[in-house]
Amino acid sequence: EAGVTQSPTHLIKTRGQQVTLRCSPISGHTSVYWYQQALGLGLQFLLWYDEGEERNRGNFPPRFSGRQFPNYSSELNVNALELEDSALYLCASSLRLAGADEQFFGPGTRLTVL
Amino acid sequence: AQSVTQLGSHVSVSEGALVLLRCNYSSSVPPYLFWYVQYPNQGLQLLLKYTSAATLVKGINGFEAEFKKSETSFHLTKPSAHMSDAAEYFCAVSDLGSGNTGKLIFGQGTTLQVKP
Image (tube, rainbow over all chains, first blue to last red; front, side, top):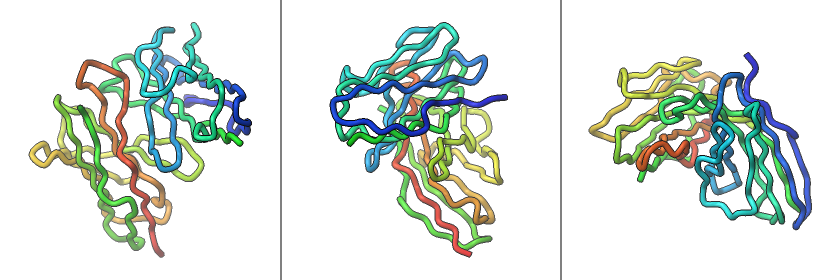
């Protein structure tokens, strides 16, 4: 069974640019989550999508947004990039009712903002 | 609100020694708890989870964890460390305080070093 996949693996952008990260969940999983892992800040919850709808978002500014497609894949968009957006962005997926179900993580996209 | 505290950002053990990584949680509702491992430049891999069944949970790679409600702890152990266990370990709790938020709350992580 294929795991969660993310693309690209690495990305270098400059301040003010926009970036789109992509995630494909495990087959049969309807929920997709995004987390930011920045140096010194640990793993921070960004967004939760389920059945095409945004269900919850973390404490991040509106320039972080995303969407989920009918095939349950997802995109994370970050506008007006700032230096502190440099981080590993992790996508995870789970069956519905994520409280008890574990989240399965992808390998991440490493974003560097110069 | 739920929270997780991992005691010790770095733990060093000798190969073959006991591994003990500490995790304490705070939760207003019965918690769902997880341990994940992250190898360098990789994503997170689930080691084990607690979802209110048996209090002693066995996971992959010889790891296990015991849920102790009275101590609000969920410590991770492995009887004999292997060089391949060197990685960063994260304890996490599902944020269910105000319904299903979909959010995992992670501890700050513990880096395990295994010395030959």
